[in-house]
Length: 244
Image 1 (cartoon, one colour):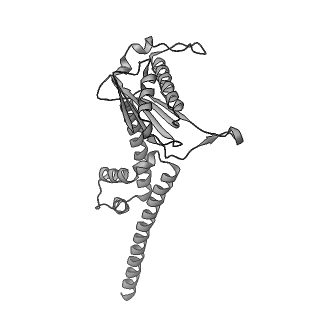
Image 2: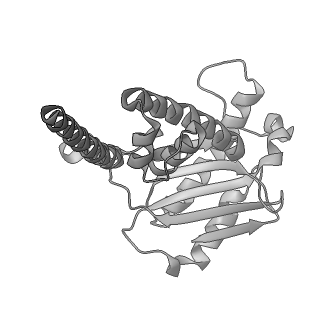
């Protein structure tokens, strides 16, 4: 489910009251006992707003020099906790929560998204103290973070590709492994590899195993094919030499 709070922003000290009213009016949307992934989005332009310095926060436990980045994280964390409490007060479970700056349609809105959490739960503690772990994320700028992730992904996949190419040492065989038309163009080979195995840069254990197994199976199949061709060629040459 996705909801929009209008005439508000991330500095609104009554944002929890507005969210509470929204939840109460939409209780029918939620299934009791079902955990949700909760995402709060505000307009990225507000990261430059001086209200981050003016926002009234509880006194910190330890004194520290507050830089702008720290103030941003402190305010976002505080507001996220406020909204999380609203969920808890209304019996809605959320073990994965995020507050993020993004390119919204307007600066005076807050976008709230609640999706059913289908991830494998992790627990901490034992016996009666055992409880599900909760993860909260603060992402001041989604575009910046996405760009950074793309850069890291590209570098990681590039290394995997060239390490693999060094082992194969044949554009022809690599083309066949990737199931594309034979080419000597490494850019074409890299794009095909990235398209098929791009998730290898940061996969789950299960997905990593699936992709590696698929690549291994395809590689062994192609290499076996060329080994058989080579053996037949050698046999033919031996027979030919014997006749002469």
